[in-house]
Amino acid sequence: MGSSRLTVTLTVGLAVLAWMSLGAGRPRAALRVTTGPKITSPPASPPPPVHTETPAPCPPDTLPDGDACVRLPDDDGTDDTPEALTATSSHQDKGGRWSVYEQVPRRPDRPAEYDAYRYPVSCEECVVSGYDLDLPDALQRRGRRLRHVGHGAVDLLQKRGTAVTLVALEKQRGDAEVLFVGSLFGTTVATRHTVREGGQLRDYVVLFGHLEAAAAGVQPGVHVKDGDLIGYVGDSGSPSLVHLHLEARRVRDGVDPAKLTPSALVDGASTIACDPRNVLPLK
Ligand SMILES: [Zn+2]
Image 1 (cartoon, rainbow, N blue to C red):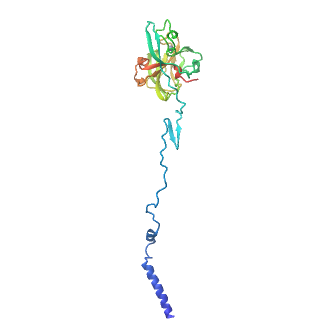
Image 2 (cartoon, rainbow, N blue to C red):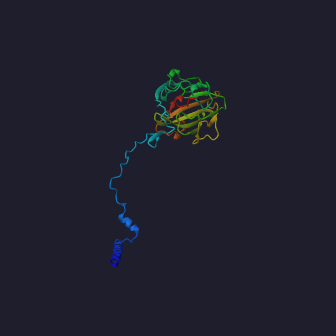
C-alpha cells in the first residue's frame, strides 16, 4: 500500500511541475495572441475584383441619378427651338435709295395667323399692321405720314390706358430684365430676354412702343416676369393712333444689350429685326 501512495504522490507532483513549466499560470490573453488565428497578417488571396469601369459622363442638360442620366425639367430636348435663319432683304426708302438689311423671317414651323399668339395685351384680331420686312419692297408698309418703309414689328390696336404686361418668350430662360425706359418709339420700354434656340442661348430685345406711360417701378435693371405690368397703351410718338408697337430684335453674337445706347438697341449693327412670331408664345 505504501508503494502505491508514493506512486500517486509522484504522479501528481510531476503533473504539477509539467503544468507549471508550460506556463499555465500566465494570463490567458497572452495565450490567445500567440495561438489564435492570424488577425493582423495580410490576406492569403487577393481581394475580390472591384467594378472599376468608369460610367460615361452625363450629356449636357442632364444630371446623374445612380446609373442613369436624368434630363433637367427645363431642358428636356423639346425645350429648344430650331435656329431661325437670318435673311437679307431690301427696300427703297422715300428718297429712292435702296436699303439692304438683315432680318429674321418667320420660321416655317410657326403659324402665320397673328391670332395664334399671346401678346402683352388681350388681342383678338387686333393686329392692324404686321411684320413685313421679309416681303418684297412693293409690299412693305408705306404711308403718307410714315417716314420709314417697312415694319419690323406688330401694331396692336387697343384702348388708351390698357395695361401692357410682360410675355415670357418661347423657350425663355429666367426672368426678363428692363434695359431701357424712355423715348424711342414714343415712350418705350425695352426688355431683354434670354431664350434657348438652335442648341444655344440667345438674347432678344423686346420693345413696347407708343406707351401712354411706363408702369411705376419699371426701370433699367429691374427683373420682370410673365404677367408683370410694363406700362399703359397710348399714342406717344404716334398721335391719334392709340396702339402698342411690339418689336422683337435678336441681339447679335458678342453684343451685350445692357451696354447699348437707346438708338443702338434698334441699330442693325447690334440687333437684327426679327418676326415676333418666332419668339412669342402660342395661345
Ligand atoms: Zn409699329
